Image (cartoon, rainbow, N blue to C red):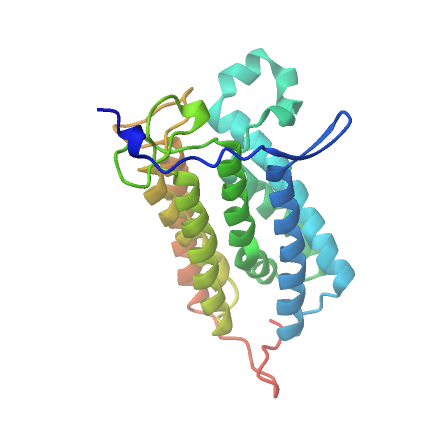
Amino acid sequence: MLPWLHAIPYPDIDPVFLRLGPLQFRWYGLMYLIGLTLAYFIIGARARAQRLPLDKDQVYDMIVYAAVGVFAGGRLGYVLFYNLSYYLENPLKILAVWEGGMSFHGGLIGTIVALILFAKRQGMTVLTIADLAAGVTPVGLGLGRIGNFINGELYGRPTDVDWCMVFPAGGMVCRHPSQLYEAFLEGLLLFTVLWLITRRLPPAGTVFGAFLVGYGLCRIVVEFFREPDAQIGFLIGSISMGQMLSIPMIVAGAVILAIASQRKRPLRTDSGSAAPL
């Protein structure tokens, strides 16, 4: 019996949505662009609601800082965490980002460093900026996982569930559409939770800490359904690299939440907005 005969057909969308001569525009890149654009508007709206000293140009600068951190950190993180031996033998390939290879955990570290620099430049507290960024990060994560699904990459482990799919790069095996699981958990669900927390006007650092814990838990759960990277496989038993890297996130997030809980909530203004910290 071949369970993939009963699978939901994979849509097999062309990863390239527009071709102009030698130029190719891909859905995955478009998802990043949409995510950054939405982040700009959401951060701007929240900064105004909380009466933070951030105008439109400063919000734009914040997005640029974050984007540089995401791409630089994401690429270096993939090199260090997932395929170091290959890139030591082929150092020029580190620059070949068009061949794929990004790490969320590396991107997170890169973004944190970039936003620390941004906060210092603006004379604002790092945790205030971190809360703004963390609150919108699930938007980009969810869209990015949809891009992974369109590319037919980062697919799940073999399964016989009724909603399994046969991915072109995954062989004639029915697999979990784990990209969609991640889009829901790390994207929609995590964004909703952080939005609800933000509405309560919590102390600085709360949203950032909740993001670290929430993402770490979601990633650990999804990794049980996701096929591990071929060049690494499982590290210990059925534990993957993604799960191992998520454990420090949860610990760090819990520490930040504990510290934030000792801080006072921001004061409300007459309009019900939060005064800047």
